[in-house]
Amino acid sequence: MKPVAFAACLAVFPALAGAGSPTFQLQPDALPVEHIYSGGWEHFVGGGVAVFDCNGDGRPDLAAAGGSEPARLFVNQTLGEEIRFTLGTLPDLLGTTGLYPLDIDGDGPLDLVVLRVGENQLLKGDGACGFGDNSEAWGFDGGNAWSTAFSATWESGRDLPTLAIGNYVDRTDPEGPFGACDDNALYRAEGGRYGPPVPITPGWCALSMLISDWQRRGTPELRISNDRHYYVLGGFEEMWRLDPLAPRTEADEWEKVSLWGMGIASADITGDGLPEVMLTSMGDQLLQFNDGENWRNAPYEVGAAAQRPYQGDDGRPSTGWHAEFADVDNDTRLDLFIAKGNVDQMPSNAMKDPNNLLMQTPEGRFEETGGPAGIADEARSRGAALADFDGDGRLDLVVSARRAPLRVWRNETEGAGNWLGIEPRTDGPNTRAVGAWIELRAEAGTQVREITVGGGHAGGQAGPIHFGLGEAVTAEMRVIWPHGTAGQWQPVEVNRVIRPRP
Image (cartoon, rainbow, N blue to C red; front, side):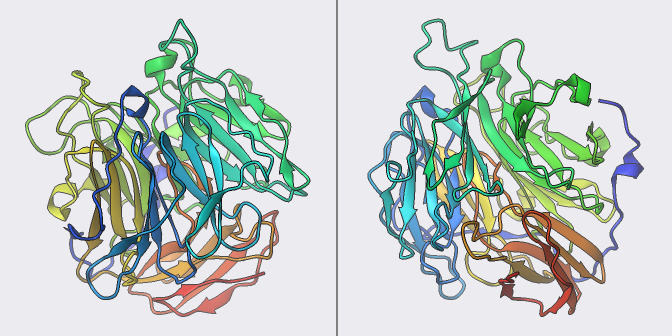
């Protein structure tokens, strides 16, 4: 990719007084049972968590993949300062790698897409944290692949969301595992049921997918991040147009970048209204700036490479998994969390590989604070999520790990700024307004966020989009609804969750 000047990529936001250094406190009693993502080589990858409100009480709940152990649902019962969950009930599912919340049938309650080593399933939610397999009723063919990536969107005129599922190594290939990547699949609705899956081929061992209207032209596209450890030769990071289904090529100035792609995070961090993308990998993590036409690699000086452990004496390269942009201290600038951990016993990479918490400075650079913040866990982390579990306006943290317990940290950052949670709602079928853009303006400038389903590593969220407001006590917002209708700017009160409608 062509070099780009550092200063041209970054918007300089004003420094805001008051917020202290980010501080998280481990909640050892948050979960009623120990939950571990376990299993053999088929569970070296995966281990995602889904964060969503399964019963409509306004508190985010958790579902976690279990690998060779059952997936589990944890229902939020937090009252006061200590985060607490009780054990919910999911169908007895083994071999799970990831979970994503989504209102598939547009009836209001959130459902769950469950990725597995084996048959994937669509679980229908009843609005009271109950779930049952509804794959057959929706005409969904779950296949028998090793599924590790997911994204979804609503296409015009369809009653059900379009689903993209990414698959890893083809376990039936006698020449595998190297060079034996399986095809991916796109599912489109025909009436109220899914038609046969459409192959996305060739596959290059996908570990993350994200459908985003990254050019903001009303034409979402599917980005796929692939693991070159198994595709060995010929593969690369991909971008696919959805209608008609076709890959971007070098003729579109799509440059072939190959990495050990494991996770995708996307958000506007430059203030131009277009989403940047963070791709996790073994060694350097790759941040790319978006100019509306193509992508430019961020200079090393931005501080997002996170290529080696920042503490301890293990100087071997890091291994990044789930990545997520979020405003941890509510200062109006998006920060970056990256879950880190060795694949298992890979000798070329660090064994003690703490998670990153990269705080964005007023100059747009990222500075590591994971150690002093208290989240430098050295387990083999995989999936994660930042969400406000206790309702105090500060984003807490949950991290899944391979062969180590699921953990929850409470955000106790002193002097954090004001905030706003925005969760647009529409009538069905797309009740969560997937594909909408939220624009929020306050004294520090305008923030823009897209509502997407997918990305991360094997797990995602459905719920309010969190905005930090710093010292601002007034703000205005509007929603650009799916398919382009712009709402009116309207004043909003801070330090609360709002659910605007068209």
